[in-house]
Every structure is written in C-alpha cells, then in structure tokens.
Length: 360
Image (cartoon, rainbow, N blue to C red; front, side, top):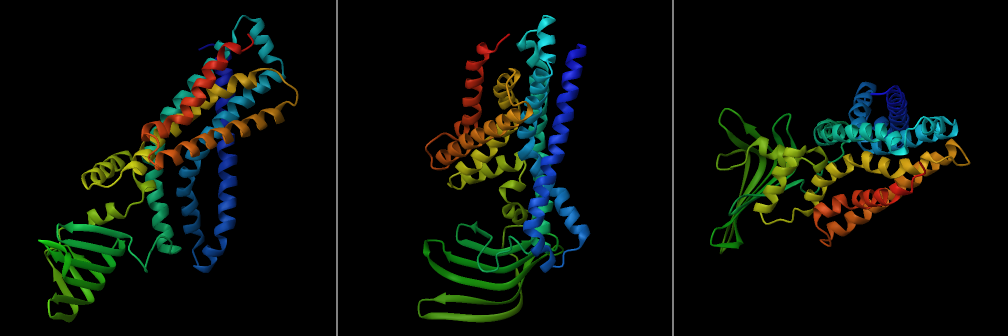
C-alpha cells in the first residue's frame, strides 16, 4: 500500500468513526426526549435506561453506516480537492480511478462487515431491547388481543396474549378444539388467565380458568384452579420463537421462518424482502460511495457545505428509491430479490454511466 493510500484510508476511517458517533448521539438524544415521559412514568432506573440505549445503538449504527461512509468519502475527497491535494495527486501521475480505489476497497470491506453486523449482532441487541420495553415500558404486551395465534394440531387452535420466556408463563390463553371431520364445529374451549410449563412433568398447567364442552343440545361449563394439559404439542422454546419479531431474528431464524410460512401456505413476501434487504442495505455503503465519490472529487464552490448538501441529497434519493421499491414488492408487483436490490442496482448503473465522465 502506498503512502497516499494509507493517508486517504486513515482520513476516511477517522471521518466515518466521527460520523457514526455524532449521528448515533443525535439519534439517542432525540429518542430519549421522546421517551423521557415513559421512563419517568414507569419509574425506570437510570441503569436500565443506559442499558436500553446501549442495546439500541447497534440498530442506529446499522441505519446510519451508509450515511456516515458516504459523508466520510465526500468530505475527504472534497477536502482534498479544496486544498489542492487532489491537483498534486493528479500531477504526480495518479489517475482519478486510482485515487478512488482506497475509498472503494475500504467501503467494500465495511459493507462485508455490515452484513454480519446486520444479520447477527443487531438482532441479538434487538431481543434485549424488546425485552426491556416489555418489562419496564409495557410495550408490545397485548392484553386485549393475541400476540400468538397458531394451530397446534389439525383440530386445535391456540391463542396467547403474551408469553414470558423468563418464567415459561403464558398470559390470557385460549385453546379451541374442533371436530376433525368438520372444522367449522367447535367441540370444546379452554380459557385460562395463566398457563405455566411444568418442566418435570413436561406438560402445560392451566390456571384460573373455564372449560366449556359444546354439544348439540347445549354446553357444559367447568371452572378450575389448575388443569394439566398433557396433550398440547408445543413447547416454551417454540412459543419463544413464534413470539419473536422480524427485527429480532438473525439470518438463520429468518430462513427458518420463511420455510415455515411456505409450508403453512402463508405468504412469505414481507419476510423475504426483509431477508434480502439486510444484504442489500449492507452493500449500500459501497454502492453510494461508488456513485457519490466522483461527484465530490471535482473542485467546486461552496467547499464543505456543498459536499454535506450532496451527502444529504444522495442519501435522500437512495432512501426514496428503496421505500418505493419496497412498496411495490409488498404489493406483489415485484420479485422480493429485485425489491430489495432495486435501489442499489439503479445507483450502481448510474455510477457506471457517470464513471467515464470523471475529469482525469
């Protein structure tokens, strides 16, 4: 690596680091101001608030990495152009294409690392974040409806308002049994305020509920304090995975969810778009630097302010393309892979088209 490469990469990485810290702090402060009332109302300890924003940071970093990388590339290239460093580099016989190489290589490596970061680190942090929200801020706990609604067997449907995986306890449970030969007729129904999993007996124990048996001439109702349900087929681990939100799932869990949705006959389009979008958004750092760097390399009036404006404009256009493509994809107007990669493909094509126009 030449001295000029080391110099440019060092400036590039330092600016990215600064951008990530600055943008993350801005996001955290804004979010904290919005949620401050909730933290105070729920008497959340300061240590929990600190932990909450610590695990919230990976998601923020994932979202702002392309912005920070583009900002760094435009800032360093624009600064080199404004200080006539780029003129000196060209005078030494180095072409613009060679000048761009360190930025492109560094941003490509960042994109590769971002794939792992978005696919595994961020979902793990989101799990902790969601758990804090449910435990301390009471968010995501649906006591009126059902967070979980699934088919346990061909004739059995289970709905659960909330499942606490730390205590293996389900809240507001309804278990409906239907006739195997006529799924429109309900045979029985169990409604319980709670249901715990007995690890020794390996069965679910319903508590404080009613059991109704439906017959042609009426129904019989029984009240119980505890009722063993050893015929239920699902386990606490399965409930925990069913309750996971998409943002909490890593690549392996997303692939498993897609397969499950396809086997159940459900539409996996949204999950497929999320799966492929994690790859495409991670590659955005490389794509938009490839697109924006030649624009910034030419010396222009306005200095750094112009380059910051270019950064904002390019980012805005990219996000608009991405949101438009996702809207078409979720309406089944486009293939999920094309939906996720459309913005990158458009910017890549524009970058390749603009590449021969660079002033050497």
